[in-house]
Length: 600
Image (cartoon, rainbow, N blue to C red; front, top):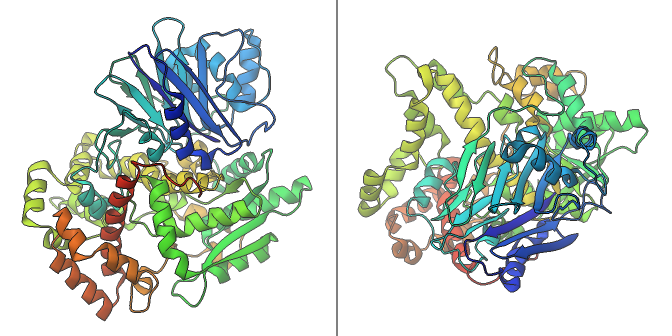
């Protein structure tokens, strides 16, 4: 697990070492164990390493003595590296260690840009091929768990990095917030496409490979499903058995591993299976971590997390977060995420990864992805069952928002409404994508959107960026191919009953049968008279700030805040939160013109 970056230019000059050092410094928190950059005429490739597999080997960038001209860097974990190494060794390749990424130059030499179809894992890979005309090949895993952001400059230089703040440290990257970024946050909570909230900054889509040649725009293609060394069962198999296999695979590491539990069904299942594996192998019981806001707050789950820990016999850590710290966490999470994200769960996720790292853990097993894959969201069922003639796509898009459509229109200035009428809103783009599905299959359309865009943009982005903010690798058994395929099987996609069945023998009955519960902090109480987030939200939404931006009407935001103070509600609190997060994000982006404090 690492942070990677690099560039490819038509100019023959070697990249400036000071510039590359600045890029690395912006994401060093995710790779504190080793820093190394290689550069040559018109190119650079660098890595900040978090040593998880083969900690004493596997130095990046990867090069093999018998393959001059091929260099690779990896962020992530390749789970079938043992089988691939054996196959490549049989073809004459030699490797200096058993690190998972060491084999990448040989795999590329054998298969060219198609090499990523052979990988089973979560990964973002960059391979530089200098054997003939230079080319850079980038690839990310099928669910987009590991991100790659890029910029193609006016001078023809292509630059990439794992994190947006690092990408902005390249001298040639010039950008600004997109004009539609506020509407995107209010409509969707966070950008959910390959187009980020910043002009000219792209995100490599899930399951995509990009080929870049000097001076040319990247050619990005989504890969068809490929043969992996250990092919998952496509859609069959018992959920408990599939999860058990994946938890055991992910619990093996050369560094300490813990579990994160919210008190919910999915994280409880992961914790139970990790504890079962420890008992069977004679290892010490795993440590589990749960975050709770100090004091009495609605929706607290620490009692259920304790119940999971007692039942599974883990060493349990109940991390008490002082609510007074939430404003500073908002600033830090906004910096690390790089894009605006109106889900308040980011605050508690950051604090939980921090606690795990401070206790000495480098890998954390989580339940991320279960709600999206097995949750059976009400919006999907509503879209599938809407009567003929109903505008199901618009209704679905409305459910994604932090702010309802009519409230957005009421808040926007006339000029911003006119701009969106001409350019189209984020909700319009989602609706068009849904309606364009083949054969008008609503369920297939929503499933594709949820898994290709919404899951990577929300839970997976937060797990990667906020885990790596503290040099913790988040491993997600529910996002393994076999489990995801079972969750989305045509015979019964989004069937949460499969999770209940899997938990029946592993968790207390009340928890095994429990319906899905929200895990975000209670915004209505936090943005209320005396609440710890009221003052920062009020400051971020000052009339002077909003008037300068010119997108929302300050007097109407003030009225919305007054209503929240008089009658606190989750809906109004989320609307205010989304507005405030976007305002803070624009401020953070402006600040990235000077070096960031790299301390997490």
